[in-house]
Image 1 (spheres, rainbow, N blue to C red):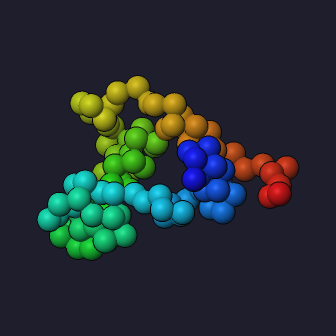
Image 2 (image 1 turned 135 degrees about the vertical axis):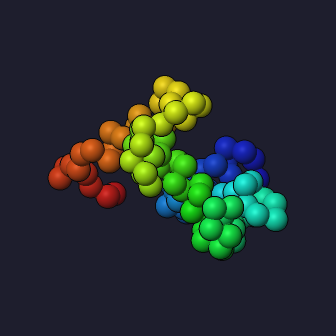
Image 3 (image 1 turned 120 degrees about the vertical axis):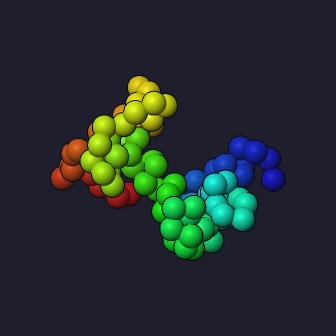
Length: 102
């Protein structure tokens, strides 16, 4: 299957949220080495918690603050937001009644 055909198939069959059609999220910081996020063990808890540390890290970037302590971000975390984080902030800040699922 060609790359364009494969991408079209993923788009047609998936909902955009991994895991879908062979696309998976790997959490490299998992205790014991990289694992699928569904099997990941967070270093802060030592528990198999679906990569909670990774989720908190990304939410901190989107919020622009530490969501656990409510402290301002420092160091590399304080870097200007990426386009992805900016887009996420916009989508989280508004709800449109005109959005339709087709």
